[in-house]
Image 1 (cartoon, rainbow, N blue to C red):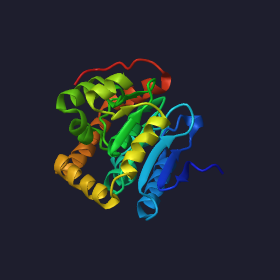
Image 2 (image 1 turned 30 degrees about the horizontal axis):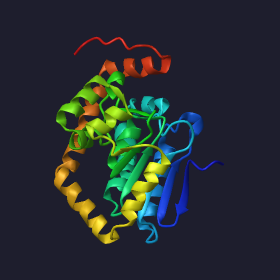
Image 3 (image 1 turned 45 degrees about the vertical axis):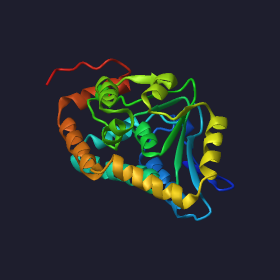
Image 4 (image 1 turned 90 degrees about the vertical axis):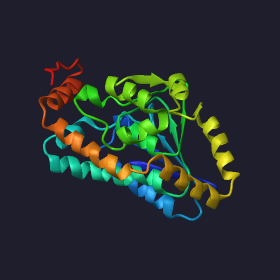
Length: 256
């Protein structure tokens, strides 16, 4: 059986690698839980000082698996259960004292970008694209995207990206402040070296202070996200949005 997440240690740096390339690293429940386990292991390992998250195959991740989304849409309890697994995993990237760096190539969409937003720093390949296309499915970003994106790029940019489902390239992502640097693994490695050059305890505590200042009400806004998603799930829009995505056609909206 193929491991859904690979780990690779490079001295004090733990690489956590999404390994579902045949599905463009789309997140089903098993991959979500495997990411959570890998991040938890990295957080608990005293020999690890920096965590790098990246993907195997042509893209970092296409986001949530459409079949998984369809199943979650069937009931509010399934939605909350799946979302809880996602947040348990994604939040580890933000909550661990060690700095986390997401290296994006190919594409990073939907729930995958929400995972990247939970990381401390993001490096994006020149030809990669990122976006939160949930509103095109009749959904909202509900695993941290609606909460974290405004703190990173500002309210105006966040509304533009989320309300229009716009997908952007590296130059716009850097200009918006969504990514820290443009480049591949060489650029990411240089950034990691800078992190390793600083005192680990000071880096970890500074990270915690900055996050507490930037997102003092994160737990409240995360709950608002799932409440909004439950309203979306009760509408006909989500059925049309998911069906249109599966059939590779434009959705037909009926209005509010």
